[in-house]
Length: 287
Image 1 (tube, one colour):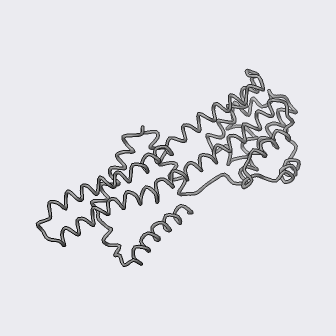
Image 2 (image 1 turned 60 degrees about the vertical axis):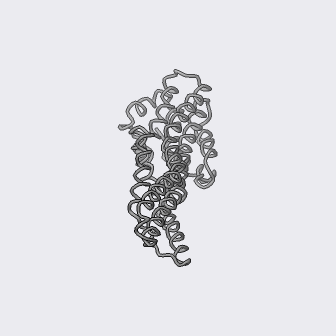
């Protein structure tokens, strides 16, 4: 919703200022300029990126439009899940976690936390981190490096749409100039039609330059920044999981491992220490 409000403010401010100065918004509506600028921008996207990046870009744009993000309640659910898993491992031995990790869809623990299990990336990251601990295939002090490498790879993959939007945003002013030059060429062929016809065509050409700059700095570049913020929020969830799992692998008590994870969060979504401890201690006895 906020992204729509922002778009409205951008458009209303631009057109409002133009009208206050005595301009008529209708003179800005030149379909040919829209076709050239938006068409070339779309072509640039197709040329510059593979199909999976374009699909991810569409997904991220929808996500930005919806405005869904990880809330404090989501983090509380995540921390509760981590605590319950760690308690089972502490009380019954790591081997007791194998049935949950190998068949997460049948796990009685994971079934309690649908908002976490429904996120494929978070679920995979957690399972990839906890499995080596259960199998004993890695030393506890090596686990954090392993999870960090995976998190960096995921972050790099998610940054491709951001880089793509940044490139398009940088290109749009130049694409606007291309549209303007095409308009001037068209104007030169109409000089014999008189000043009125020439003036209309020059106005159309200048609109191309305006549109390229307007779309770049009013929409495309801010959208890239918004998507980057979404990515950072998703990475924060992964860091939270990594802090808890690596701490538990090193021998921290479940409550301490979860507290370390809590402290890795931004203050805007971080549950209070006392609130978290009270919630965890009030949970049913984990078996």
